[in-house]
Length: 248
Image: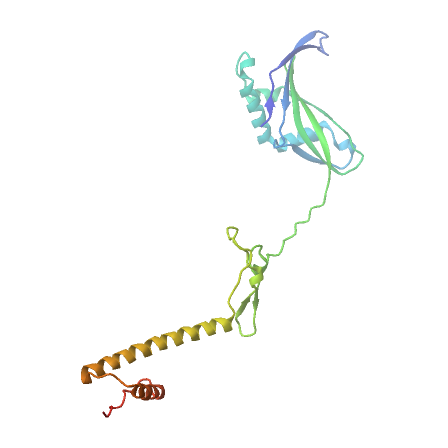
């Protein structure tokens, strides 16, 4: 939104009467986001008041908003309230700027000051020229889902499975180690075999203790070394079979 300064008082000579009339000048400061009114000039003669007026009429909504804002901000400096329609009837324009030798150009217009004197509302416009540039809209292709930043690369195998490249897996920022170590399939398989062997050994001990308890309950005698060796041999042949009857 433009910043409208408080009016500066001065006197100017009235060209019709030759007398000095009071003049009130309101300076206007713009920000980079304020809208400029544009039109295209094919040569230097196109930069004139007629094209300025045409551009204002093509942007009449912007113009009425601008005048309305000026009247609202500066209301305390006037003896009575005025309307946009009243101001439009007494408005005149001036145009100043830096000429260029390269055409065609886009002319950008901004009001830089307002002078009120002798019953005339004079808007002083400043313009600047920008070269006309060709802009061809190009539709960018959508990125492949495997090329998205931060995602690992996944490749398709012949059997339809997907292979993940672990080198492309992003590391956790909170991780303490910078290397990701995974057990090989062979090592994992050997671990499983060890676990199974331990489980079988525990089961064999349990069966031996159970058979020994049954023997004590039935005979109440110790088993000799020879009997133990015979029983061990029998269990190796068939872990799940019951031991043969011992002849004493």
